Structure formats: structure tokens, C-alpha cells
Amino acid sequence: MYRLTKPIQAFQFSTQTIKAFQLKPRAATVCTFDGMSGQTAVAYGFDGTVQFWDPSTREQLLSIGKEDLQMDMVDKVSQLTPSLIAVLAGGSAKGGVYDNKGSIALLSKERQLEPNTLQFRPPAYCTDSPHSGEISVVEGMPGFGGNNDDNRNNNPAFMLSGGEADKGVYMWAIGLSEQGAVTAIQQTHKMKTRHTTRITALCYEPFKGYAISGADGNGRINVNNVETGKLVVDNDHRQCGGGIGGISICPVDANLAMVCCTTKGKQVQIFDLRQSLSVLKPALLLGKDEGFRNSRYIRSAWHPDGRLVFCPLNEEGTKASGSGTVFIWDVRYVRCQEEEPQTYNPHSGSIWSACFARPSQTAESNNPMLVTVSSDRKIAFTDFSI
Image (tube, rainbow, N blue to C red; front, side):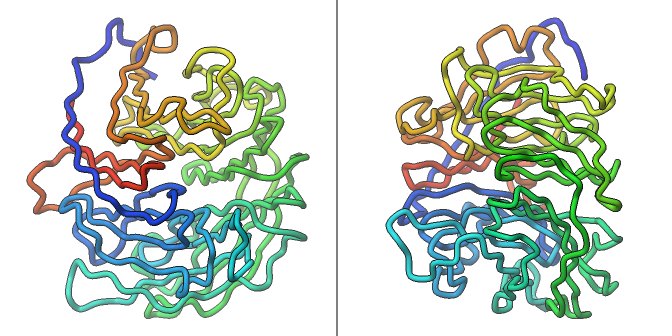
């Protein structure tokens, strides 16, 4: 990690917010689909829809409804390959039509002759789950097994899943046809973990071949060799405390992992995986004042250059705390964990996720686009520059 002695210059923001949701969103993520000139923002939430947006034009490309997905709520979307995503069903607080919390639908992209168009085949459902109860989280493994192109090599796709009741982590293989359609779904093996509570976060680190999992309640983190399932690290020193909301790898340094915690104070923790893995301690502790317990549903983001981290912090059980605010830390700055972060307010309601999208080649700006979703039921596209 770099150690500058003073922060970088002020940031510049230009934001457009768009009303996008009928109910509160859960999150937005960024996917790279074959045939698209730029990255695509994929937003989802309590209305059971999955929306695909072009960050460069701020236009919605496609929306797949709850009737098509047969889901009352979408809890997680993760990319497996450039033409395949996994959609995890959440539970409806008011009781739903489909009542299939924890089920996974796989959406494979149709190959189009016309560039920059999106169309997906009907969902393929993972009906034979290795878990003894509901699935609580899913994570794609792009590039694993050689499947990092448009699937024409006929290699399978892979993903990880975490359990609600059985606290297990499994790896899946998804068979694909030459046209990219799902042909087979099977579980390959189980990770040897020591979790005692439900799995709430998963991350695939491709360079070392790690499956990193986080659990609710006790802040436990396990690191496994993804090919063998062998446990490499059982991080139970309680530095994270609370539960683990999300884990993400730095885009320019795979040794750095950002973990979002529900602990009181220091809710954003950055680990250096090069240290002795027998005792995995955070290299940076970031967050709000002691006594503030962050929601586990928060999704933070690295800036694509790896220098900055963006995190909306919202207190569990409340809507007002940190309302509409993204906190920004420059992790190159030696005193960043001791001083107040810079902030930005693109929304009028609590923000639940932040991510960055690479613009298309024809976009007016080359700056990465910050994408956020909020309880104000809007999606925001922010042209961010330094």
C-alpha cells in the first residue's frame, strides 16, 4: 500500500439521478457482457426486478420482471462469465407469491448480431442444491477453469454459494453449450470452513485461487483453496466483530481485500493477504465513530485505480443515519484512518451500494462512472474525477 504524507486534491462530481424502483433497491453491481462496448450496471431489489443500465448514456437497456424470474425479491446478482449471471432470490417481508427465498436463477445472454444489445434466455434454476437449507449468498468465479471469454470454448462456468442454516460454502460447475445456454448444473465440492453462523459474504480471488467467506454475528472470515477446498485461514480474532457484509479485492492489487463489517466503529477494514495468514489482521481501519453499527447490506467499492475506497454507511434498523452520503477514503494517505473522510451526497435517502463502471468507447467522458442506489428509489450516475 502506498503511503503519501498528504491527501490528493479535491474531487469533482457531476451526478444524474433517475427514479428506477417501485420498492427499495438492494444493490447495483457492474457486469462486463460480450458484445457491449462498455460495462453494464445491473440494479435489483425488493420489487423482484433486475434492471440493466448503460452508465454512459444513463439509459435503461432492459428490465427482467419478477414474473419472468419467479422471485418476490432479488437479494444478489453476480457475474459468472461474460454471458452468464446468477440471480439469488430473497424473502418478501410482506409475504410473496413465489415463496422461493434462497433459490438461484441463471440468466444466459443471447448472442446478438447487432452490437450493444441485451437479451437473455429464460432462467435456468438450480433445483438440486447441496445445502441443507436456504442459500444466503452467491458469488461468481469469472475466469476460473479458463472460462474468461464469450463461452465459445465450451468450458463450464463456476460459482460459490453460502448457506443460511448449514453454514457451508460450496462450489458449483455450470455446463454451457457453444451458444452459451445452460446445459447442466452440479455441485463440485464443499469448502472446509469453521463457520458457526450463516454465510453473508463471499469473494473469489483469482490470482491465488482463494475462496474468501464471511459470516454473520461473529465476524469470522475463512480463506480456502478453491480447487481443493482446504482451509488456509480461519480468522477468528474478532477484530471485525459483528457480521461481515461484503468482501472485495482491490482491482490493481489482489493482495488487498476490503471487508465491510457491522462492528461498532471501524466498519471498513482492509487486509493485506501477503502477511502471515495464521494471524490475519487489518492493515487499515476506517469508519464512523464508536457506537455506530453498520448495516450488513452495505456494498462498498474500490475506485478502479485502487487508490480510493467508497462506502455508504447506514446504521442497522434506521433510515436516517448517513442518509444519502458516500464516504471516501484515500488509502494511500498515511493518516486516512485518523482523519475525517471526504463525503458526497448524491441521494436524498440511505445509499445501499456503490460500484464503478467503465464507460463505453463513445462516451463523452473517460472517467469511471460511480453508480449508487438508494432508499429514495433512485439510481444515480456520477461522473467522478480527481
